[in-house]
Image 1 (tube, rainbow, N blue to C red):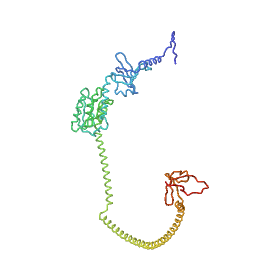
Image 2: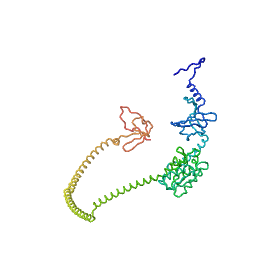
Image 3: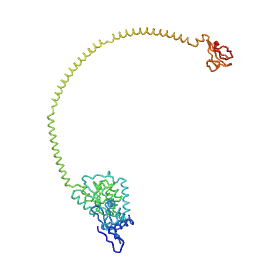
Image 4: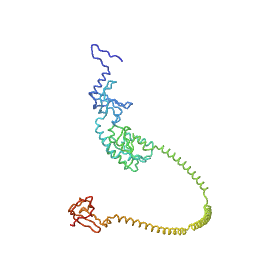
Length: 468
């Protein structure tokens, strides 16, 4: 790297060209930045990389323009020299050349912004109605006999179409409906031309043709009236408007879009020579297939004839086979009947041996004997049970409170609680008591209540009581 000399008598270090350029770039990017610039385009070219380069100028100055490939792909038109463009982008410096430039992020042709927006909205509205759907597009006829062409009668498009049609198939019926394809009156004339063609008898397909041109030249084919007329056509419509890079709403609604009028003519009509050759080839294949089929049928007929038996021989064979089957059926039936008889005799013999009479007689005797034994046993058990019951009843009688009363005892209960009186504290003087004896219940009032001394003899229950 070369050393930068220090200038004599100066303390400031000199800058390199790159340093100056870098400072200018930073200053421009900082102070100018992203801007809108309007100017006339000149010297525009597209490099092999797809990036575009040109110059924007006015009457006093010019500015380098750079439009990268992704920008050119979305602007919807091809920039050409002489266009007045509105560019939005960032102003900077291309340091290798020291040139300041604008790197465009979007480009619009001045005066085209409103028209482009109106066209976009029309396209969206028609698309929402389904006019551009592939499902409604019709196939072209295989070999049309009558072709209608709506185009300018003086343009190059009609000459190209007629030349191609005459070369490919000479005896076609071609109806030309003249109309303007450019200008303010063009949409109405195109609609009229389409309707006039539809009135022709035997019409198979319509070509809507026009040569290339600018966006203004093709604006008639973006008119809503033309689009709806194409959609309403009763026969398929081929749109051949402009060049391959040009697209209009007529292309979207048509049943088929072709890049040029010549291409449309080549597609709509197959070449007569090729058709004749194809028909000849198909005829040969059909003849060969017919011969092969005929030979196969003859072979199969001969084979069937060899295998075919005379009806009389077939009837005689069937009669003989019927007699044979009848004899086999008779012998089989006899054998089956004899076998059934032997089996029945065997079953009867076994049934006699297994007769239930003796078994029933033996079982009845056993039942009678068991019944006698069961009665004896039952009487014995009843007597034993009665003896046990008498003993239990005697013991129960002995333990019964009523037996105690029979011996002269009584039971005393307090009134009104009904509790058994076991001590003087439960029957104080003046209280009512109930005394139960053998055959009665006595109500009495206590005159005196005292506990007896241990040495005293037990007085009878209920003594010293006085009836109330």
